[in-house]
Length: 379
Image (cartoon, rainbow, N blue to C red; front, side, top):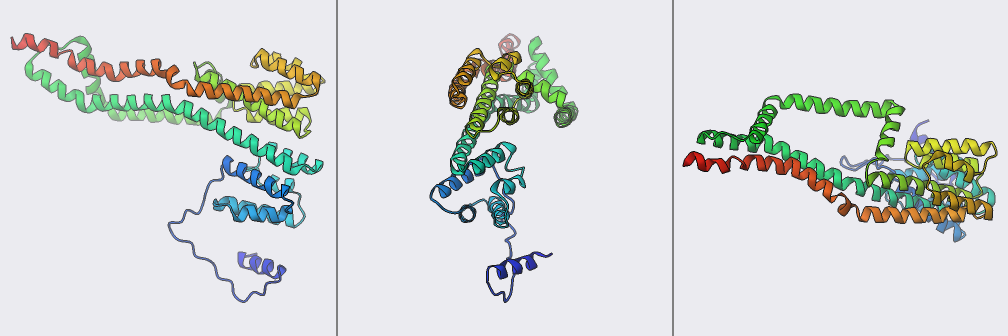
């Protein structure tokens, strides 16, 4: 059935007499596809919770939230969800039809809210969870971007010096007939190789990049190896490890508050921790819990969770306040990540200075070494 016929049916259903339907033209340079981000989903959950708390029916609330959204893709998605709810689907059923935007964790919490009659409260918790997750992702990206960008710039500057600057100095030194120091000769040889075989270097770099991306997409064992290695990298490994614990704790706390069974909550937490070592360990813990073992007894076997986390979970299980204790664990590790990210510049500075000194500083020193011998030649 065409879109025009669907539009006529919908308008008639609303009691509107249709005379003529004209397709709206879209400007050529209009951005037609906008990506739906985690921030969009968090805002949606927050706005919908506010609407429901105000006593607005869910269909009307979905319409208000959708119409006020600046992201056209999000507006279309909410319009589709609103239509599904209007024809009789529950909100959970409507959301599950869009798994790319609403994961199992989101849908499970909504389902628990609908069953318990506390949908607005659960939507608030989802919004807080999404906002904290997005904030943590941004902080981790910020932590990784600084050192990587500095090192990348250092490599680019080194290549520019080798290709364009070193040949000029080489011609200058030849005109004086001076015998170059061994270090300078090595740099000049590197420069000549770069000028003659730059294409080979480009091919090798492209091949390495292609192989890396191919293995990353095709082989789970390769990704597992990368996740294992990154946990051992100074500072950055600590940030990744602490963020995995924070996500695990926050997810488990949110789902425990909603009354989701522990096994199901562990399954969701495994998928949100962002590291395959933690994911596999949590799945093993889930399997142990399924056999009747307590969470506090199953966690130590993984070797990834600090004693403090296990003790807090143990107290939570014994006192019946697991969700509250897990929230405190998540808060603690999120604060730890904040401190690590804030101090990253000073922590990474010695390593960055060493790399800059070896790459850029080494090339500059190599070019100025012969100047000390020029006096002998002129004399």
